[in-house]
View (cartoon, one colour):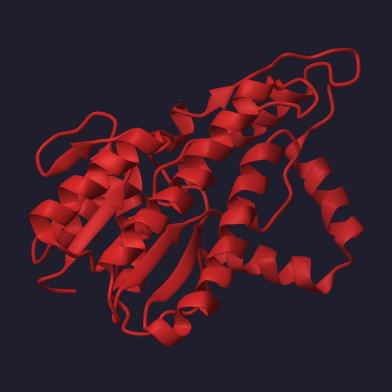
Length: 260
């Protein structure tokens, strides 16, 4: 892409920062993040007032948006039964509703040839115990993206969701953990987390995953969905050929090792 007006949420770290730096060479990139910064607008994506202010600034200064990359989000670990209502609401507000509300406000500034890129997750494709809320949010993002694709097809605005697997970014360390438990769950959440953390070194490098995502954003024609990471493409293939209960059984055994 060249000479485009690009808006990226969650632009201060991880994938958002990588894409901001990548596209800023040949385009005008406006970041939206809570910390602000150069060419960034301070914006809490879960605040409608902040969204109104950010879009007003963009409209006044640039008059249009060519590409919107909805990237802001965080992870949450915990048993659904034990999570606080506020925790559940917050992750939906930030990871899904924030993207929806921002897109609603940005669309009047987009014309034919525009793109909406939603950074989803491989967690949208596979049910995972104790990451139920995050998986649900990202699955919702995928279906929203696909519906939006059909709504905007005749307008010439392309929409896609990109589902990367685990990447070495601050996202993992910033994940919120609620280990509240009872006799039903015991220490299962901690065991699941330790299992995941052991695989940190096998995660994709940001330079690789970010490069793949940037190339997808650059495509003239977008597919409805992309998966980033060969392992996750293979797992998605397995999920489609095995009965769901079988796939879920092995996922649970893999994710939550028994106490020794």
